[in-house]
Image 1 (cartoon, one colour):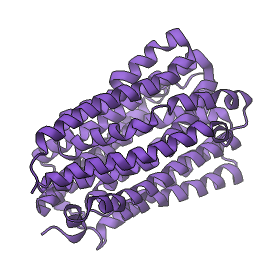
Image 2 (cartoon, one colour; image 1 turned 30 degrees about the vertical axis):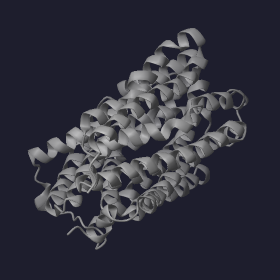
Image 3 (cartoon, helix red, strand yellow; image 1 turned 90 degrees about the vertical axis):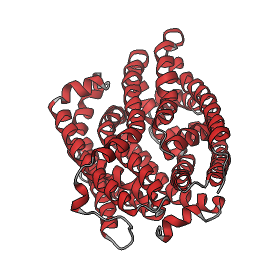
Length: 449
């Protein structure tokens, strides 16, 4: 039989189960997001606005490589959830072994490529003008630690797939605390500037890596790191790739969006607009942490119960997740609408940024109350192993709507066109996702066991 922690995914009340899964995920994402916010505050206050712009350029580039590990982790975790749901422990173990080999090998390869073509990569992602100097310093250090981050991103979804959300939460909290401490030490005390910020981030990646893979060697994990499972199996690799391709495509689209955004912002507003978006992007991650937590908590519940044929529980998990997520999104929306000036003032004392960013922040968050439908809807198809619908719905916001809008609207409305593109894309993608999710539920989740 499946072990107790994973078996509870198929038996415990959905509401209670979602909270038990989502709360640790939310706390973990909160701390990780808070780490990014504090990191940006430290960099902005102790180094300067151009340092924020430099990190804004580099992070999407490095995360594009690390997202290979995320894709392999999320794709494999979907398979593992369903394997545990159908009591196939052997398959779950072999999938995990293949994940580790794939993540390490691919991330090392792309890091080497990224270092060889450093100048071209930085130029592509928008390191223009005064942004280039700090961006190059940060990039040159951070790239060496990306394989550790990739392996962390592979391991964390697997921990959640086992039904161990508290350990997944700790894996996010420990590196965040380490990064904040090292930021203070390297930037403020030792005065290492951008290099200090980069080394602090590298150390945080290594802390996360050590904890996650300690977990898989410990008695707490149902899955173990076994050399015999490192042999790649074509069928498993194919299945991981198909499902993980959704996550990789999403992150790839985010990176393409970052390229277009950084160049568009620089064209219509210069370095200041890139810094403004650096602040807004941190808030997008930080403020939405409760909804992201609900989404992360939903995935193993939906995947396990779908694998076990308990379709009524899958339907219930969808409804409750959207309800909880929407309530949290409304609270976030209210805070952003009422206190944008206070939020921006934490990051910098630059007068231009303080004057222009609050309005932009309001526009970007305008459709926040609807995002739960978007997140749960696209996540559902990935959780149950339907790669094509998951891929298409994942790409709707950035690929089908936001990128075209950012290319078109600034030509008529200037920098305002960039900010207003976000709520329009959110609204359109939510409508589309809601339509397909509703159709899927009516067609394929009729039978309950």
